[in-house]
Length: 247
Image (tube, rainbow, N blue to C red; front, side, top):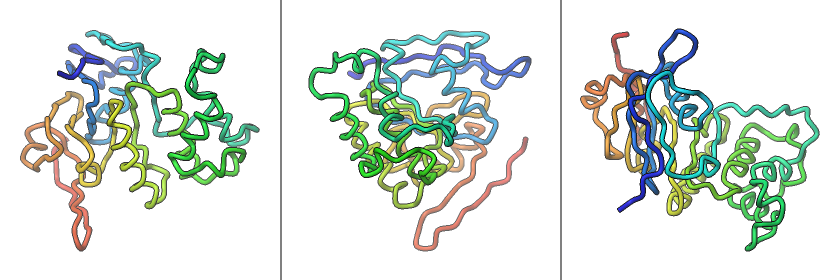
């Protein structure tokens, strides 16, 4: 039986006097791969920040069954100053825990681990490049490498394909599938069609959270879950259908 790693229990959370999440309960187990979907402003990013401990809920409790430091995070927008003179290698190195940096990491040196991770995301040749010289996709790869270099038990990604090229988007999901063999993944996305072959369950977030224990979800189920998202149909002629919904 999979081990419980994190629990949200009757969470209410928001900003100032505005409630964004209402009575949210959710359990995350070892090697889950959960896609998080929902409309803009529905609370997806707030949910991630509650899990990461960046926002304290006004009601309810967050229970960690792992060390909170064992959670890797790739935000939707990175906070790096592209004018700051720092290399890709240095960015990824900053993702290593202090224990690893001080020499406790026994199986590989820091540099070997960083090289391994950079190679896995396809930018090993850029390790000495200044971040200000990177394209949006290259920078996103560097930030993903930073998120996984310390071998977290849970990896949280907030729309990781925002600035990546189509080629890396496909490689990204294949990489995440490999990573899921040894860690738990939470992935925010607007494109259920693209992520459905990879995920194991879907969390629909629109103020409340409804968990769907499958990677396939119907239009009727989305209505029941009050999850008015953009449906993208993938086929011989890809097209998107935007459903009407009530606010």
